[in-house]
Image (cartoon, rainbow, N blue to C red; front, side, top):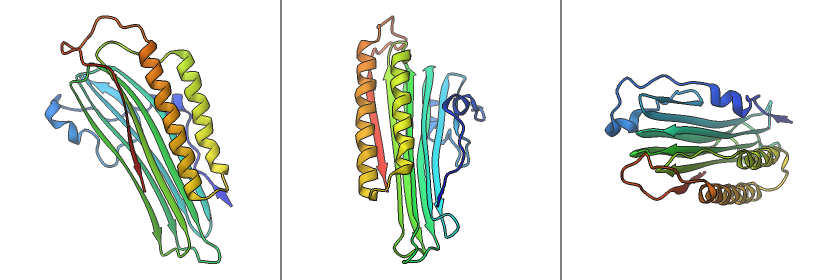
Length: 225
């Protein structure tokens, strides 16, 4: 039996807002995302924040559970950014003859312009709790596009990302091994990186908003458990 928590579409997730920072201090970006922060993004007083999470939980009532997030945050121009992404998968209390399977995968895409400092937190955790023969897989993929000039994703790039989002969601129906699910997620992440690199390379380069004029970068942070 497959059980998947309902999740809002990208536009709704992006529209959700977090609590604001009371002080703009780049040296304090490590604490801008509290442990219980709600999925969403905002820019407050020049500091961008983005938080995403995928969480699945399988148990004897729902022996197969899958959850994914595929969210785009375009933070615009910011002095700094604190971005957090995590995936948590747990299988609990099933038996060896009726094992559980729990899969959680989160893809977080963040674009930011002129950020002097980006504090990125990306983690995953997979747990089999009193669950002999069960499976749990958690994959957190964080893509950060940083440019010294104003940059937004084109409509064609967003359309292709929507295709990738559907492909990630399709992993819910995979009957392959956990290794196969991981391989498919890794392959999809590589395609996202290539697409973002091409988008940055093709974008018009206007006046820089960062006096250092650093080179634009596309960084993938990946954590698998």
